[in-house]
Length: 136
Image (tube, rainbow, N blue to C red; front, side):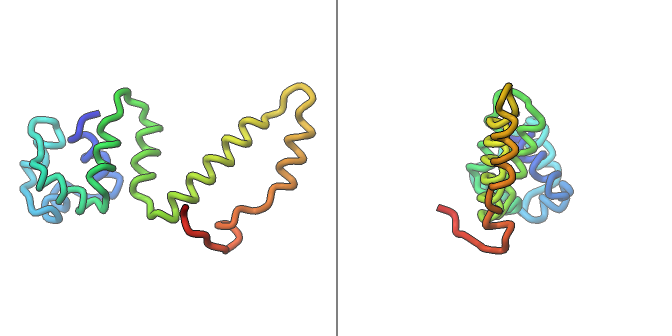
């Protein structure tokens, strides 16, 4: 994915029109359209304004743009992740760890009892019980 495609994806995920984006970053619709279609490159100054309009860091935009292969589910997850507030990012990462642990405990021959016991004895996540923790 190129830089323009990443900007377009992020803009659309926020439900923003090209005209709204142009207004927020003090640019012209035609200029942003050319950037999103890969026909032009944004200046560094404009890139910072675009990131600000998207409530992101420039690094977040580049991390999405640098993906070499197109995996739409992974791209959607990455884009959603960078748009989350920090506390929600921590929660999403914890959820991913829980899913991985669950996957690693999938029943194999003679392993079903361990999975059943581990899911019943797992304490609730602090975020789900109303307690808040600060990210490390």
